[in-house]
Image (cartoon, rainbow, N blue to C red; front, side, top):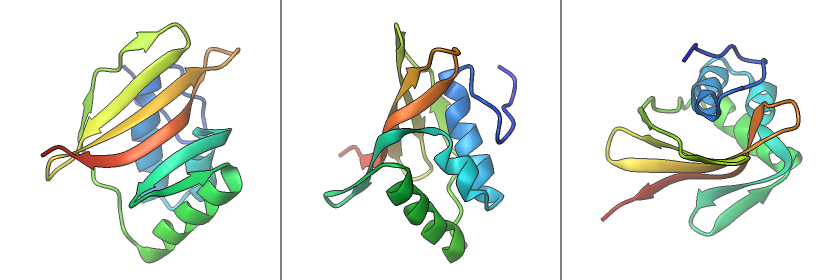
Amino acid sequence: MNEPSAGKPAYDPQQLEPMLTASQHGGDVDGMVALFEEDAVIDCGAGRFLRGHEAIRDYYAGIVASGRKFAVGEQRPAPVCGDLALTSTSLPGGDVTSEIARRRSDNSWLWVIDRYSVAWD
């Protein structure tokens, strides 16, 4: 798989995570938001859910402003069923992200649901 470039469409759902991390490490909030459908939902943990680009942009802007960098983990193979894919990454420390991506009419992929990390006990 070729490494995706920030700002370009993801034509493989497994490109989304490296694109998100690259955008975040580069301070590109709009590039991060562009990886999500307009009404996407992010589970931030502790019962906090964000919906839509405006809320997602505000959240990512805060993370970028804080200087915190997303950890780079080991991406798991994404099962694909029709126009849906489940992406996930094992992070250092044992957390696992999970996201649902949807294929668009141009064959690019965007996330519709993102759960940052779930600690598996």
